[in-house]
Length: 350
Image (cartoon, rainbow, N blue to C red):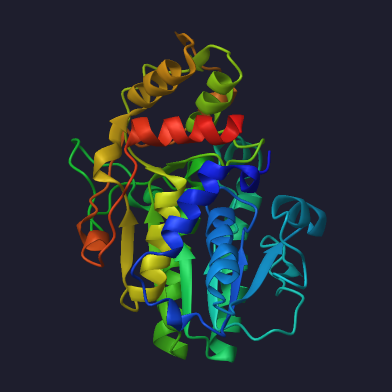
């Protein structure tokens, strides 16, 4: 599926390009995006590509990943070397992207990010978050980059009692001996690594902590519940939920998430972390599943999960987030859950 073939998607991206942001900071600059074919960063890349195309922003965009073919296919009809440059980058290896371009801005989103991988590859999950982040921070330090943006996760907060949303200074319990902690523990460590590089080498950095992001840019291998719900419903299949779905989540439509990240990149304060959460979309897993089932006119079925499936599950019953700090930068989420699901289905069908 190529979302760039969807008029609905393009219209939303063009609207983001018109946001009142200091876009001039990126004009004539080089921007590296890692994880560029993933759910979030592919959408950020689309925004910058279309911004260049419509507004002649002259942003030199470098898309990093392990597969040139995958990137070329994902970003059609844009052309390599003309609209963007490819750089081979494998976060697990800890090797620098193979390019001589000096990066003014680095958006680092390369990471294992869905449950099936956490349970199968806990070692690689940790190494990607630590080694990959380290090599890019070293590049930012050596190049005196203008800003490094790290895409972390709401999972860094760990578990706490109650359903009050987490602010950026709330930290709960993470069982570090549980292999599933490979993700939140290494995300926590990577955030501290950013702070260490800033203190020791003067790297200007900001961190974003997305909640649960969903939308049409998901990959076929994405095993997150929101991705499975959407795929099932669009295909006319019943949605199968492997729990009661009482877990409270901050969901955010991917285009709103991408606009939030660009807002933090261009307006955030050095050394600060920002939750990405749409207050209109703080719902339970079951409520999201029900919205998808309604939009797809399919049934919602609850089944018992296997022990293998449980190994990858998010351990937080509540991962709702505050959004005050992000909204203070001027950002507002546009799409609530119903609208986001509706657009996801429309774009996937187109």
